Length: 152
Image 1 (cartoon, rainbow, N blue to C red):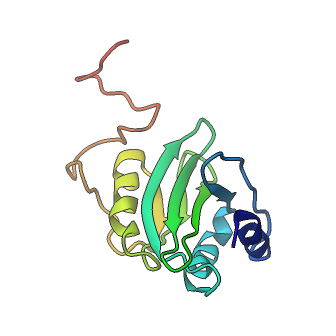
Image 2: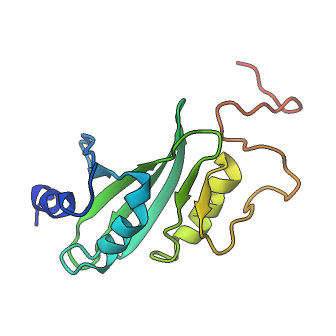
């Protein structure tokens, strides 16, 4: 199945999907409330079978945070990029997908640790790289490190 066929199937699964243009991968932006169910279907439906989450990245935008999921189906050879935005920057939250793809566990912990994105129902959401007493989220654009600040 080509990307257009995949897009046709996925379009029926949730309201409010957006399809950002990308020269490399088919991309879909999923509304945050639909993310978990959409992700579960991506993995479980035979015609998609996205069984491999190989990258999860948090992105800091001026108005919101976004999580980008890179998926592959080892059965069909499809690749897909799923994007989900948080409601804002003050308390950025999305549902976890670690119960769907176990590799998301550490990726979500990293996004929490460095950007402050919280993942609802994550089984062990705690810092991964920084110490427990670290204050703030160093990959946020508004993060200030007065001790080690590098001025450009």
